[in-house]
Image 1 (cartoon, helix red, strand yellow):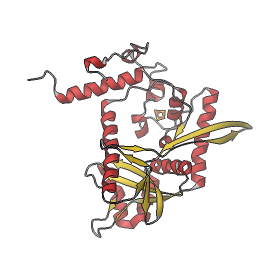
Image 2 (spheres, helix red, strand yellow; image 1 turned 90 degrees about the vertical axis):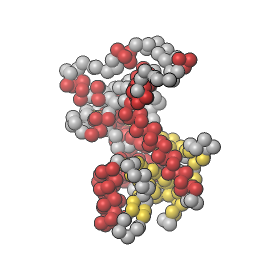
Image 3 (tube, protein in one colour; image 1 turned 120 degrees about the vertical axis):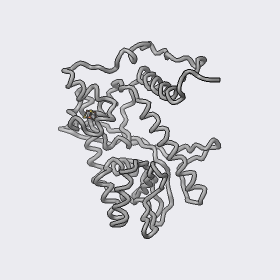
Image 4 (cartoon, protein in one colour; image 1 turned 45 degrees about the vertical axis):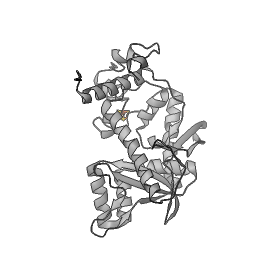
Length: 297
Ligand code: SF4
């Protein structure tokens, strides 16, 4: 039977509505800093922990996130199938993988005689046995160009060159690994990159056939630098004032930032906040516009 809507339109419309529904029912989170946001703009973290309502997640980002989760699961399933020793994971009958290495720890931060509690949380992608010992596993999917340039560094200069390249071009991977290693008690992480365009796992030198993950050693000074940043956000939260924007307008992170409407976009509009718009504000009594009986979420 013919349907009235193109299936792709139906999918993306549904995801868009879900994003609006999520934003509409947004609740302030507990004041805990996530390992995955260790490299985020401090103002962005401040808005999240302040409980500000984020702009609705777009359908495009939702699809990207679902595919990323599936990539993680498939990568670990394949490794397990071929005898790679993994830990900290549950392989479910439905093909999904549950992570059960979750930690939370509070660190003190002091500024001008005032003490602040900085609570950090993490959920590791697992633990993996490698020739360099038992490592924390971190999986990162990369777009075509990002992976290509990293892999070229590996082909030209081996593991050291690849590691240097990640430090320079993807510092968020390093920061996340530092926090997760600290909380989980590991001194080495194994970063498994995945080329999302071809499915290639790890680095691969096509001329020599060499393959490798990326080994990252824990660095206490590096972790302390991250702690200082989180501590600064904790201080600004107590003061009730957001940090100044950390990036100039137009930076890549700002393009993805769900609080842009409270930052650069707000300044551009001379203080007028355009989000949450009427589509988010309606039904603010907590009732979802969607009824499961009608096929909604
Ligand atoms: S728009 Fe950019 S500078 Fe402003 S909070 Fe977001 S990431 Fe930070």
